[in-house]
Amino acid sequence: MKKPKDKIRVKRIPKRGIYDKEEIYSILDKDCVCHVSFIYEGYPVIIPTIYGRKGNKLYLHGAASSRMMTNLAKGIPVCIAVTQVNGIVLARSLFNSSMNYESVVVFGTAKIIEDEEEKNEGFIAITEQILKGRWEEARVPNKKELKATMLLEVNIEDASAKRRTGGPGDDKPDYELDIWAGVIPFQRTLGELEPDPLLKEGIPVPKTVKTLYQNEKQIK
View 1 (spheres, rainbow, N blue to C red):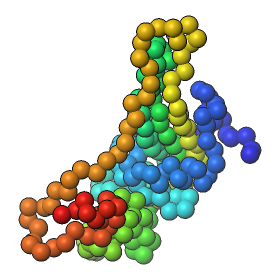
View 2: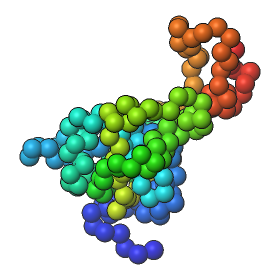
View 3: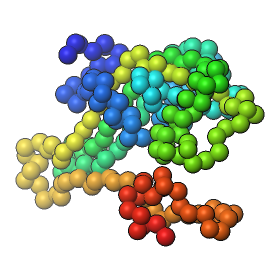
């Protein structure tokens, strides 16, 4: 593996750094919310938003008048971060306490997508990132909605990931302390469905939702 660029090289605990493209993609595919950072009128801004990935590209969408969208469309440098916390690591000392996590940092520039067919492809990528198969179940955007919404394509020029797993690593003398240590795991769970109060009677739960729950018996 070639040496990573200094911009993306993990400097704090380098062994946790990940530079393999497919592994970075796999971490990105586990989520749908990112934080987009850029410079606006001389000061830093960071905005949480939804994204979709297709190949080596990330897609962002928003109101055509959005500060983030209009500025990124100019081709300014952008940094995008995705983080998933998997557990709180409680060490015997506060200094050695930590978190288990996976994170990705992406560098690139955004390009506005004007072509209607390409725009639909980007919206499909975002929709499928949130809930696979949903594009086929719901009404697709009409011309008015497409005009009001800007789609940006960010080519992943540089990226790295970082991951921490396992239990606490205490200093040797601290293992003699009468202090509990271990990991509090974090798991994402699905709550009980909340149908829209205005939903017409007789409309079944869609296949995508049933698939997400993995067990149709959970869905009434």
